[in-house]
Length: 120
Image (tube, rainbow, N blue to C red):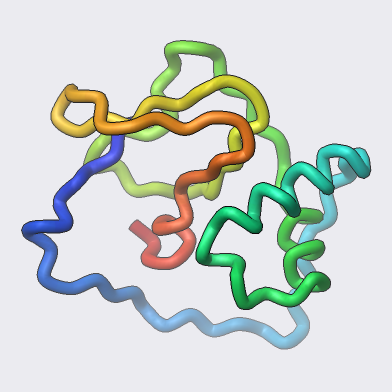
């Protein structure tokens, strides 16, 4: 994964309004109780989910689907538009900017929440 660290040059962050239908029904992707518990516990480490009720967290986790990525494969490149929120179930992910490794994350850690918030 490549992430841009351009906070020093960013003046503002904004997003377009989103019209949410009151009839929306989240998809349900079957998963084991063990995986569900793992994901719920992983969300506890992310500020984005602090204010969600248990029911809302369960609905969010229930809609998540597994994506397997082979070692060495780039998940997203610097400058690309992010389109997913990821929770690392196994392995490690390195974050880099301009070809330099900035940090890494492992089991239970997440990334991609800015793509959900800002459509970026």
